Image 1: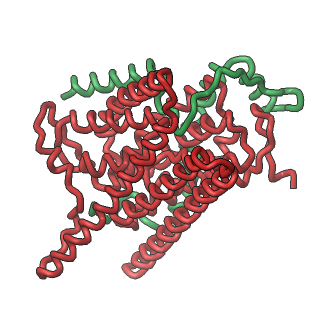
Image 2 (image 1 turned 45 degrees about the horizontal axis):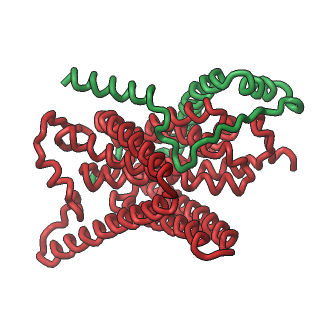
Image 3 (image 1 turned 90 degrees about the vertical axis):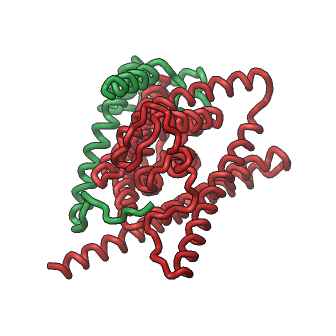
Length: 351
Length: 98
């Protein structure tokens, strides 16, 4: 069974390559569907496959850049990418990220901040999950009220509508975002991307997990546009990150390409699935992913307070994340197949 | 408006060139430890690849940064072909709700 293992020329270890392909498919599906890089899902998977951790982040980012490119191309064809919004947001993201990263280094020099940062991450994830589910509950309430009054349910109605207040700020220059379908001050996406970039810099994460809901709730993007535009940003930042890490000698390109083979198909499945799942379906699934991520971070914090739980919590956390990746991937795949089947049947019916 | 776009793009490009720590997803910073690939057991393209890594991280980075988008586009195109075989419309989306 030697053919199932491939030698990594840089790190010198042999890795079970079908595992890399499967991992690529899983994160490709989820990334294409939610519009995020998904580094928090990849690292435990690489760890299980025996991949040297010194190369894990760089390899993950390199594959993420390629995967996001594939997803962005597909989302672009569906009209889900607002390129103008994406370019404007890069400015804020880069500035915010750098300030956040510098700030965390400064805090580290003053004292131990690791625990504070981890708890900050937990609080942020709880807030995101609350935002998503409060939004869903509010929308359902609006729909029930409309039905009770005998009115038609507005398909474009949303639950939380904070973005409408932000859109009232008329600070020039005002910019129209055609794909997203709104006009607002350019300072709004710059400010929001600055804050999300700053948080990502402090927390040491890519930021897709924060940026996607921020695009929806603060900037006012429809869900599909938020997913596509976020992937556009992940693509640019991922390529830059891949360059930085590779220059530091921390990328195993062979592994990244093997993962990309799976991610190419996964990204297509995830992206095409957004065609068949309504915006709120994506939001609910995203909320579940955030809850899973939050629990895994808490599991990693527990050994700091309860001695002797390190091994158990590591296993539990990895199992949770990989279980979540599997469950969400299967859900998205099934929805995509059901939608495609219905579309093909409808086409045949018309013919 | 054109000037604004020119400025924004310029700032973004400059920032990406200058700032080294952007988008280091999910993690710790790479340590200063130098890793050298063991080329003794490698032959063919693997030996060439590992030698490239050992000799110049710059060239290795250029190869990686150029290869990833090219491979991405090729794999994306192939995956597109597979998806188009299913017979679904891959150019538009009917759902428009939030």
